[in-house]
Image 1 (cartoon, protein in one colour):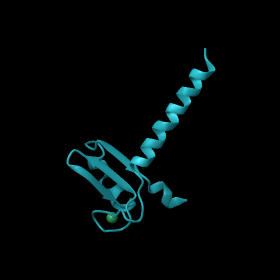
Image 2 (tube, rainbow, N blue to C red):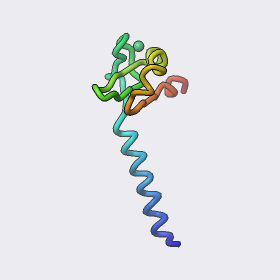
Image 3 (spheres, rainbow, N blue to C red):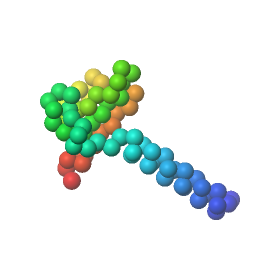
Image 4 (tube, rainbow, N blue to C red):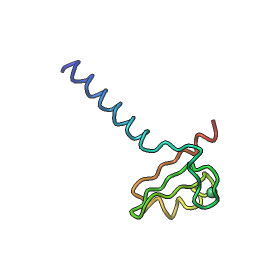
Length: 80
Ligand SMILES: [Zn+2]
């Protein structure tokens, strides 16, 4: 057991989390591909990324999520 080793693992975990968060940071410039409202959901597909508002994201989630490489959903921020 090494306390330093544990500390390094913790720092690495923090780094990973930060990378994921900065990879997708949706803002007011990101618009739903269906209606042009602010995007809260990004579906990464082999053909490219699709942006959706919370409404359209949920509408297509069942179809798209199984084939998406990643599914990023920030719609919970709407309820804050
Ligand atoms: Zn929309």
